[in-house]
Structures are given as C-alpha cells and as structure tokens.
Image: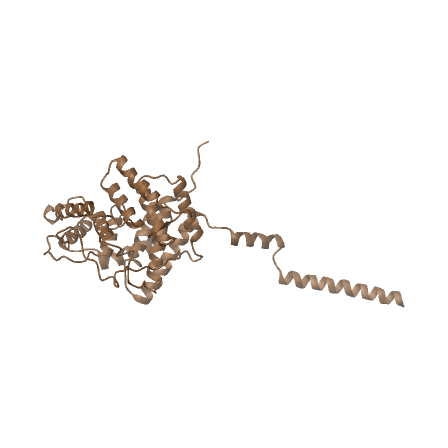
Length: 355
C-alpha cells in the first residue's frame, strides 16, 4: 500500500513539473540566448551613419509636427530641414525625394526672393532665412543663380554705409542665430553670389561686398566658435591661399574640447550646434574625415544623440537678457547642424581599403 502511494506521488510531481515547465515556456517564448542577443542589440551604440539617419528622421518628423501645429516655415523648422536633407542627399545618403521636394517648395514659396533689379535704399535687417538659402545654394541645387543674385540685391539695398546690417532688439533676436553684427556680416558675404546674372543691370553692386569685407578687417572678432567657423568658410569661398587658410583651420581646431566637441562660447559646454558647424566648415577647408580631430568630433555627436535622433541643447541670451525657455527652436537648430556636420564627415557607404 505504501509503495502505491509513493508511486502516485512521484507521478503527480513529475506531471506538475511538466505542466510548470510548459507554463514557464509559454510565458518566456524566447530562449535565453535570444534574450541576450536582443539585449545586446538594444544596448549597442549607433554607428555614425545610423546617427545621421536618425538625425534626418527626427528633422522630418519634427518639422511635420511643426507644420501641423503652427502652419508656418521658419529659419529652423523649414530652412534648416532643406539644408540638412539636401546636404545628406548630396553626400550619398538616402533621402525621401518627395519629402525633400515638398520641403524645398514650402521654403521657396515663403522666402525665395522674386523681384530683381535695383531697390530703393532702406537700411535694416538681413533676412536670416534668405541668408541660409543663399549659402546652401552655393553648392546645393536649392535656389537658381538668379534667385541667389536677388538675395545679394536685397542685401545691398538694406546695407548700412559701413557695410553692416541691423540686428533686432536683443530680447527678440537671440544668439546663436543673431549672435553679433560680425556673424550677420559673415553670413551675408557667404550668401552673396559672386556670379553676374544674365541681365547685368540686375546684379548687386560689388561695392557692397567690399564695404563688408573692409568692416570685418577693421573689426575685432568676437572669437566665438560660430564667428571662427564662418570666417574659415569665407576664406574657403574667396580662394584664400593655402598657407593663410591653414591659419583659420588651426584656429578652429584649437577650440576643440577634450570631449571631442566644440562649445559656442567659452562659458558653455560642448554642443551639437557648434560641433556640427565646425565639422561643416572643416570639410570645405579640406580637412580629411580620417583625421583624429574629426573622428573625435564624430564620436562626440554619436555619443550625445538622444534616442529620438535629436541632440540636447541649451538656450542662450544676449548679455543681460534671459534665454528663451522654449527649447524647440534651438534643439532643432542644433540637431540640423549636427546632421549637416556628420553628413559632410562620414562617408555614406563603408569604404573598402584596397588589398
């Protein structure tokens, strides 16, 4: 009798173990090694190319949200979208052609100048969106040559006698967009087309450019990263001799921080805006992407990118002015510049070394 009870209990316990095993497997469909692989994949850092793709995805998604909620195009949501996507496409990255065409048309409808010919002098503000469009169109197919020249015509008409342009009140024109008269003058020169249009009467007077160049030579630089970057870009655009160009390259590289990034000003941490701009300028200056300083900058941007593809940014204000508390514009600016800098510094396909 006792042996029968022992046999019954043994069979019952075995059956219970089988059932429990089935329940455990039902609740844990993945094998332990599968879970380890998934955890490893989730924790694996992005590659630089993946960071660029993620950055473009953020820009497209965030501008779609902006358009739906605010129905307006701005120098950040709109202009910078076109710049980043167009540059990535030119570097061989896959960009949705329909999305890009829509973004270009959206920004052109709002900001592309439509009237040429002489304009009545009316010194005032330079249009930041037009400046950005003019600069990107020097090497990207965004605006036509005539449209770029019309930007120069507008700049000449709104220029002061000393070769500069107005800035908005400090509380309405925060940095880094409206950083200083120096950076606005540099942006204007970079957007000012050198070519002569088909109708020479519609050309902007070259004397305006010469005034701005003279003002920059006589004005002490603010020595921010943006000013240093734009001065280097201008040297590249003007065909500065290699020896002098190297001085600008060394000056910008000397501002790189130990973490691989650049800071906008000396009292700020490294960020995506300054680092992306620096990479962008250095690429045009001929600094190779395999150089150690470039690799460290790329690593900084990859490491600091958020999960949604954006980069963290800190708003800043002019001296004595509280920074904007609304983080969306500066976050978009920084993320666009990071994407631009990475696209110019990271090959779109894996380069194969010759045997």
